[in-house]
Image (tube, rainbow over all chains, first blue to last red; front, side, top):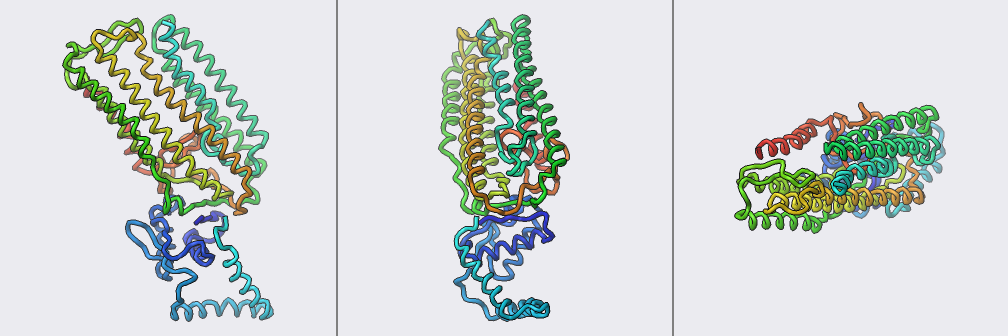
Length: 132
Length: 363
């Protein structure tokens, strides 16, 4: 998969790495069993500090997306076909709640909010194979 | 005499060709060390600077070559070696000048407006890497083995003292007492060189790709091709270098002296050919890559290569925050050391120390 890190945006690099890997899994560009480079290797390729990549990989591991292997790098362990854990669903709903509240509080009609959500979710399915 | 001059002129001819072709080698997103966004690759200043550089390098080369050959013909001094260094100095100066001119226009016309700087990585280059072309190591190893065997066969028949070097008129100008060291010194060099070149080829094969954020997918495919191509060309160069050393060794091991002893400089020709092959292959490759990048629809990443913000000096790369030791060269083809990493200094020290120690030992 291809990682495109924007150096001029305000988003920290470790965040961009995390987001893009999660999005790749969502779009089925990455499936369970596929490998990712080791922390050191990815840091070298990006030209960034080891700790930046370590942060991203650590968060991915905590969220249950990857399993880290000392020697061979990382392996993706979840994808769209996995069974979601109840604990995750609860946590995710709690995180989504303020976002939706924000939209409502700004005056967005509920139908618009729902259709935007649907659009975004579908955009991951439509991408299918590699986006680039 | 003329033959000797021609042989001595060959490396100079190669260096002139190499310095002239250098802007067309390597990364097509770089010209004279300056990152050029896709939209600006045919900007007038670039074509203009390319022309100036090439004229400078060619005329300096012609002058140095003629002067060098004349002096060498009159005095038999090896001035053509000095000419090579002067030519490289001219090229370095031309490169710095051209880069500065392009950078000035880039800043003045704000070439980076509307583009965000980024870095792209294809994880598949690490998780599904190309396979190193180990089979191509064979020619170099075969030549090395042939040299060792020839040496072992001829050793008992060698005279004492050994003739180590012949001047252009065919007479010996250096002797050494016969011993394993003096007779096989070149073979040890050959073995070290083979091991060193193979190690270097392997290291650069796995070094960082520096993909073009404007079209990472095409750039990644191009990298796979150039990795393999470059590795094979380097291994052929190793074989050529070994042939050169074999020729030099044959001179030492020939008793009575070989009739072509006056042309001992001809032993360098296989290396010249090997380097010529690399330059030819990589020029062609870059042309193909540039065409592929120009034809490809692009990825609309909105990103362009990171700008020259990490270079303290234009000729060397030194960035302490970049973890890579081997980084792609910004001029010409291949990789160079990141001198911001201590490991690079150690490697450089080793590269200098080993041949020096070897030379000292063989005295």
